[in-house]
Amino acid sequence: MNILILGSGGREHAFGWKIKLSPLCDKIYFAPGNAGTLAIGENLAVNPNDFQAVKDVVIAKGIKMVVVGPEEPLVRGVVDFLESDPELKGLMVVGPSKQGAMLEGSKDFAKQFMMRHDIPTARYLAVSAKTCSDGKAFMKGLKAPYVLKADGLAAGKGVLIIDDYDEACAELDRMLGGKFGAAGNTVVIEEFLSGIELSVFVLTDGNDYFILPEAKDYKRIGEGDSGLNTGGMGAVSPVPFADAAFMEKIENRIIRPTVNGIQEEEISYRGFIFFGLIKVGNDPYVIEYNVRMGDPETEAVLPRLKNDIVELFIDLHKGKLKSHRTETDSRKAVTVVLVSGGYPGDYEKGIEISDLAKVDGSHVFHAGTAIKSDKVVTAGGRVIAITSMAPSIDEARVLSLKNASKIHYQGKYFRKDIGFDLM
Ligand code: AMP
Ligand code: GLY
Image (cartoon, rainbow, N blue to C red; front, top):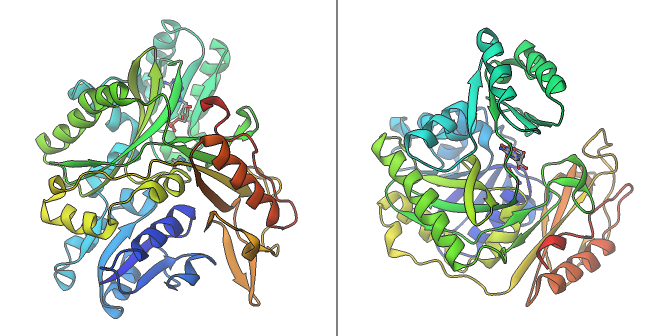
């Protein structure tokens, strides 16, 4: 079967690598892909948000399955577009419908969904410009710090955590005044939860679910979790504190009620749910839903998953997810992300990357890379994700660091302490 992956990051390269391991996969295409995906398939110059162009390549290349990597095409409705087209009958698309994608596309929708289904999450109030004063009154009743979230997609920048009440009020005014464009027309104000975060992933058809290995990601640019937020500087899987008892709480209180809620509300959903969770005391709470896999979590999770992922995707569409049991590699995976100098602020692109072939004993997943004059060059903030597997987190981390130091490009930066809080 020919399979198309939408997206161009480390997550999509990792999906491609995993899909390629399946005997069910013939040829793999990426739209648009990166320099790394070229080595395992064909890159197509197609924007995943241009649905007609996606349809055209599905037909032209005889594609039978489309895996959607990032959230934006999902929130814009790519799945509904492809599934409702009579010319694409029988195409299997991995990703939720537009309505299902609102679990990520609207934080207010996600909060209301959690309220309806009794899913533990932070107390909140959603406000608009008209009800701004209610928001300020609600904040008065909360303890600092204050959490303000733009309702819509804001490229991971829409969440602000502010210590001072007056500053939080001023920021609320700015958000409702258009700081994040239309994404901030509604702002969700939340109680701050204090604890340690983890990410749990399921594949679901809104009826059954298949739990993937969990992970923890490291969002801050600096060591010891300091400095600005990024898309993710590294990840670890498994998460030692997510023991069987805690995972059972997550399944009973969060995963099952979420999947049941999708079913009760008749939301069409065949894709991943990424539960961004926080452990408060001994209890799990939902910080956010994403309707796709995480990046860089995917780069740590998929190398540990032993199941044939194409078989899973086919059975997702046949309503047979139940017949699969999660099989995992017991080794620990540590992913270290190499970024461009200056990231998450401004950075240069087009810088030559050398010595990639010197990496030994680790997976190399490309993120922001491209080919220019036959050379691999940087093309984004997050450039390469290196994943190593070993009996302990520390051994896996050390191997990833050893290989990270072998790759060269001007301005290269990576965190050396991924997993520091788990050892
Ligand atoms: P989100 O985009 O909703 O995942 O938020 C980004 C980050 O902000 C999360 O990964 C948390 O670290 C933090 N965060 C969001 N909501 C809360 C909350 N209610 N309490 C504490 N931290 C939060
Ligand atoms: N690493 C977090 C995310 O993919 O949203």
